[in-house]
Length: 310
Image (cartoon, rainbow, N blue to C red; front, side):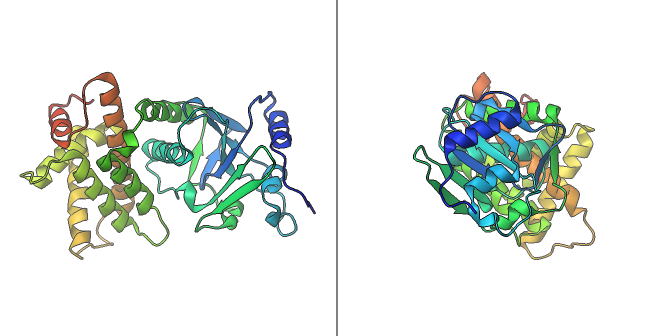
């Protein structure tokens, strides 16, 4: 059994050998990303965030956490976000951006990485561990991942991450931070599909509609319909109908009238998450290209009404 702390330089060497290319930077942060798998790849770099997603073998991540060595078999390949120690902003914002981009790509109810395990190594060889509600056992799940990323998916993921990181302070805008946190809260253990859908719908209202808006259902359906049509291309009338169903489902949940047997909550939940994550990325894209000079629900809503955001 190991008796001393891991050496970051040794870990860098092991990963370099595994990837088949040299890594000349110190690897400081190792954040487990629950429910994610990689198809046909050992690792995938996300340059805009200064990290790569990596199927980290047991011998490497057990160096960071000796708790596992005497107790568990060395066969899982959990996916970690491994920091390349480049400028990428605060680590919590980097992880939030990655999570938001994954939801925008997939619409999946992924556990936020903070609910799992994060290891931070320093130059002197010491390691700090942050263990979330899922505990260390989240590394050893034998169930298939909810999302498997291939090379095309990773390229789209990088595009979204790059849009979000191009605007420093984006996630500090109160409505956008609330939206990002809503996606995280909705996927927490104990929160059902109906509640998650309502949480997303409320955040969409905050983002897209000014206070005291009239014709709430019609306005919500029209604007969210544009977002859904952008995320999941379909007939426009179908997107608006889905958006209207999301808003009505939100009202049912808030008033304690949700019928869990009559609605397709899996579909509504995925679409509500896609729309909310998509709204954030649309705002980022519009600010970056100059369609918006500053975020405002009123101006954003008008652009969506005119279809200018597509």
